[in-house]
Image (cartoon, rainbow, N blue to C red; front, side, top):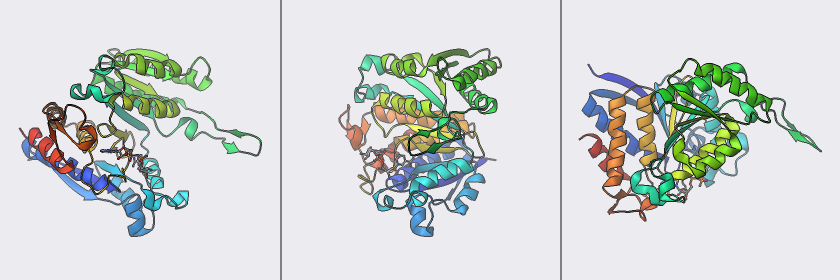
Amino acid sequence: MSKKFNIGVIKGDGIGPEIVDEAIKVLNAVAKKENIEFAYKEYLMGGAAIDATGVPLPEETINGAINSDAVLFGAIGGPKWDNLPREKRPETGLLGIRKALNTFANIRPAIVYDELVDASTLKPEVVKGVDLVVVRELTGGLYFGEPKAKEATKAYNTMVYTVDEVKRIAEVAFNIAMKRNKKVCSVDKANVLDVSQLWREVVIEVSKNYPEVELTHMYVDNAAMQLIRNPKQFDVILTGNIFGDILSDEASMLSGSIGLLPSASTGGTTGIYEPIHGSAPDIAGQGIANPIATIASASMMIRFEFGLIKAADRIDNAIKKALKEGYRTKDLSAFDAKIICNTKEMGDVIAKFASE
Ligand SMILES: NC(=O)c1ccc[n+]([C@@H]2O[C@H](COP(=O)([O-])OP(=O)(O)OC[C@H]3O[C@@H](n4cnc5c(N)ncnc54)[C@H](O)[C@@H]3O)[C@@H](O)[C@H]2O)c1
C-alpha cells in the first residue's frame, strides 16, 4: 500500500499559482516513481482571499492548514491591495497563519549551485560550494517583546527570550545539523546583551544532547562579515528573530538569484514551505517566473515533514541536473544558458529528471 500525505496548498497571488503548479507537477512525478500518494487541498490567502471573501486569512484556511500534514505556499501580495489598511492587507494573512500555526522556526537554506556561481555578486572562489542553513527563531525576541511603545519623545521595544523558547529553536538547529555536516554556529551579541547571554547558556546546555555536533559561537556583527568573507565555513547558523531576519537575507544573496531558494516556517502545528521571494507582480501572468525555489520548497517539505528522503533527493538532483544541462528561466538567462525555458517547461524538465 502506498503512503498518503495530505498537503494544504496556498497558491496566493501574482506568480504564486504559476510556480506552485510546477511544484505539484514535480511532486506527482516522484510520487508515481516512489509509490507515494500526495492529496492536495487548496486554500485561499492574501489578495486572492480578500477578493473572494473580504479577508486575507479566512477561518477555513487556518483550519485547513491545521488539518494538513504540511502546507505548500506560493506568495501573496501585489499593488492591487497595497492601499488597504494594514489589518486588511495580504501580508496580514501570512503573519496570521504563522501565528495560528505557531511556526517558531524559520529555516532558510542558502545553496550556491556550481553552474550558477557567476550569478553571485561575490567572487566564484568565495561562493562555490556554499551550502548552509539559517535557523531563525520566528515568534519571539525583539519583534514581539513587551513592553513596546512609541511615545512623543521616545520609543522602545524589548528583546526578550525565555529558556524554553531558546531550547526549542536550538533543538531544531541541532536536529538539522545531525542530518547535515554536524556543525552549529550560534549567533548572538552576548558581549553586550543579557538576553544573548541567556541564549548562549541555553544553547550550550542543549548541545550536550548532541555530542556529535560541533558548536561554535559568533557575535552577530562578525557573522555578517564572515558570511561575505568565507561563507563556506558555515553549516547550520542558529540565531534569534532580528539577527536571523538580517542574516538570512544576506545569506540568500550569496546565490545571486531570488528565484532559487526555498524556506520553511515550522516547529508548530503544521509546517509551511515556501520560496523566499514574493509574488513578483511585475512578471505575473507572463509564464516566465522561475519555479525552482518553489520546487525546492516542496522537496524540503517532503524531506523534513514526511521523511521522504529518497523522493526529496530525486527532486534536488533533478534541479541540479536541469541547471547543469543549461536549462534556464529568463532571470538566469545570462548565466551559462543552453536552453531558455518558461515556467512550465522548467517544471516539465525537472519532473522528467526526477522520474528517471
Ligand atoms: N512570502 C511572501 O508571500 C512575500 C515575500 C516578499 C514579498 N511579498 C510581496 O510580494 C510583492 C512584490 O514584492 P517585491 O517586488 O518586493 O519582491 P519579489 O520577491 O516579489 O520580487 C523582487 C524581484 O525579483 C523578481 N522575482 C521574484 N521571484 C522571482 C521568480 N521566481 N522568478 C523570476 N523573478 C523573480 C521579481 O520579478 C522582482 O523583479 C509585494 O506585494 C510584497 O509584499 C510576499
